[in-house]
Amino acid sequence: MSRRWTFTSESVTEGHPDKMADQVSDSILDAILAEDPKGRVACETLCTTGLVVVAGEISTTAYVEIPKIARETIKSVGYDRESYGFDGNTCGVMVSIDEQSPNIAQGVNSALERRSGSGEDALDAMANAYHQLLEDRTLLLLQLQAYAACDDPEIRDATRTGFKELWALAERLSGLPYERIVTFFAMGMLMNVAAAMDLPAVDERWTRWCSQ
Image (cartoon, rainbow, N blue to C red):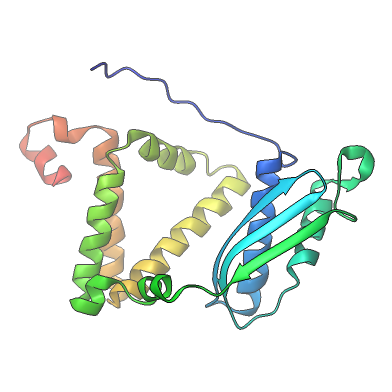
């Protein structure tokens, strides 16, 4: 099997329908977290000619006007008149939101490993799952590319937000002290570097320590 392959990245402007849909979903999440930091938001947005559909599961104590948020976000992108093919002032907005299902809530509230074992079991489960993800070098390179592109303010903010969410997840699921979470993420970054250099393919004493 050939080990040669091409790594590419796609970039679209904020006016692209996919990008606009993501911005609507993100704006809904931001509005809810601003009022309810512990809110659970899993919603997706679909945009088609003259219509926006927001669907998913949300559990929160906050009240936000989703249609208004969707319209304001669309207008901020620049779609504010019919001549542009989409008008945030007049487009239809359909909302289909349910509460988070009990099964999903159980997994988010506390990891199975913590419910049935210790905080270390929860971190071990996260580490094992991440190790499997690293087998896909595309995902690894995307992550490293994000770190390398942090000179761009938008990419830096998005990367910080993602890392913060991972940190909060590890703390919540494990319930372990801050110092242990620091060690956990330090080992994760070492795994990134080792995988990027393909150290498991090098049978030397120092590589075995870095790759275990």
